[in-house]
Length: 64
Image (tube, rainbow, N blue to C red):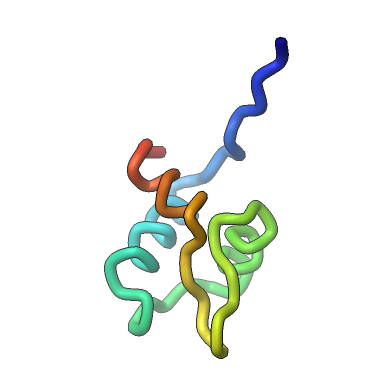
């Protein structure tokens, strides 16, 4: 049986996840990183801002 592995994150992307979790309103994340996190399902746009999804929060808890 094949196992689907989570996408690789570089240090900046993982730190952006942590910033979004800790301070969702005051984050300063480059748009290319925001786009990548949205593309892989770890973040989404809500009311004009970006927030973590359940998968994004789980990724933080599992570590890099």
